[in-house]
Each structure stands twice: as C-alpha cells, then as structure tokens.
Length: 198
Image 1: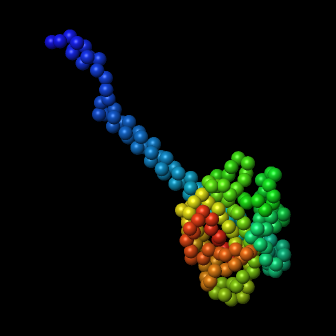
Image 2: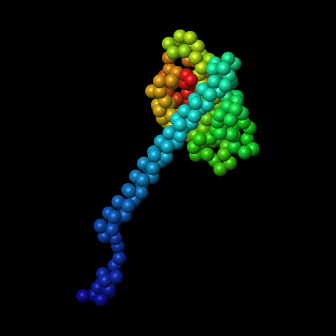
Image 3: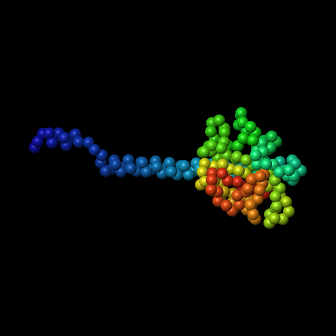
C-alpha cells in the first residue's frame, strides 16, 4: 500500500451527514423564530394602536362632557390632538415638539417623533357631531387618523376595529373634522381614518 494514500485517509476531514443535518435544522429553527417573531411584533404594535384609539375615545367623551355633553363646534383633525393635550386628556407631546405633533404609539424613534416609515402613530384626530346611528338625530363622533408601517398593517388595524359597535360604518362616507372616514373600505396606504361614535 502506498504510504501517501494511507496518510491522506488518516487526516481527511469533512462533515458527516449527521453534522450537516444538525446545521440545517438549527438554521431552520432560527429562520422560523425570525419569521414568526416579526409577526408577533407587528401584532403587538397593532394592539397598541387599538388601545390608543380606546384612550382617545374616552378622552374625547370626557372633552364632550366638559363642553356641555355636545360637541357644538367641530374640532378640525389638525387641532384635535392639541385640543385634548391642552385639557390634559392625552399624553403630552414629546419635548421640543408642538402640541399638535403626532402621538407615536409603537416603534417610536429615540427623539419621540412620529410619522416615520416604521412607527405606528396617531397623526390627527377630529371631533364633531354627525348624524347618529341609522341617520337618526345627532351624535358626537371622533375621527382618528392612524399611521402604520405599511398597507398590510393598516388593514390589520382596520380589521381590529371593524366589529366595534361604535365604529361608524353606516351610510355614505362621513366627514369628521374635515377628514373622510374609512367605512367598509380596505386601506390602500399605510394611513387609515377610523371614525367612532362617542
């Protein structure tokens, strides 16, 4: 037997099928954690936005109570956050920003600003009296303009509130605070307008 061939076979290195299978399994587990983990993160952000909408609805009801129970003068969507913050019904704007600045709810940049590509925030809100349920009487209502990280996330937010009994989805599109409500329409951008009776 040739001594060079024998020496090479004693020092030959490589991966066995078992080692290769273990590496592939570890990679598959890590990939699934990343894929499913992102879904849980987005679901958490959607939940935070829905919770923030509930906070805004309570604050808006309180505001209506402070003004005699009826929103006589419509509050434009560009001034709603400022109006409720001035009454200390919502968290204050981040330091150095105007009271009308968006309210960043999830995935906020370190400076507290909102409206960036990846954050979930309340951009505007309007308050007004509109035709009530089944177009009977007048009822206080709030429009909440939500910004998400993409159309799919906006759709998730929309789907999360669609079954809420206070969600306005009857009749023609309504204008609240100068903005059109999204009623029975799927969002096509990262922003969606949600309207609720108070």
